[in-house]
Amino acid sequence: MRPTHPMAPLVCLASISPRRRELLAQIGVPHAVTGAHIDETVLPGEPPRDYVARMARQKALAVRSRGETLPVLAADTSVVLDDLIYGKPRDRAEGIAMLGRLSGRTHEVFTAVALADERGVALRLSASAVRFRKISLAEGAAYWDTGEPRDKAGGYAIQGYGAVFVESLTGSYSGVMGLPLLETAELLRAAGVPYWAVN
Image (cartoon, rainbow, N blue to C red; front, side):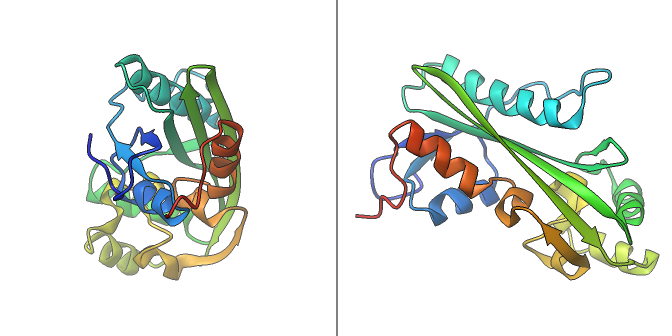
């Protein structure tokens, strides 16, 4: 683990995602980082909301069980269309096809955030709706070739080049990015961990 802020870390972020690190830093929370490395298989018939909640909880507990003494913050995000979870695309063909299915439609983004400490695990869920404009096959291919979609749930990044596809957003921008800051701040406050810890 390595601190990402000059102050001593107040929490351990159970994610190596640079986006989640940036979001946590945005609200002034000094933190250490470690990967959770758990099995992320969706269970048969598991609803998307239950899946992200289970993943966030398991990530937090996995890191905590390794002897981490700081409160452990973990999150999981899924893009959902027609009750199907869209994870990270496996390859170019799947990435372009995924974008084609999202084109001109409204999809849901669920992000669960969990905080594990000596008292147990607390959990919050953020749900957002994102509508894409129509995206041509050529533009979808050009977007894939930027390299941005390769490691993103749903095959796009709302905070990056993918922003040009977003016609409307109802819900949490930071939640779509991967760490809903309202819910994260609620968990931190309840656990006695300050945000805006910048001095």
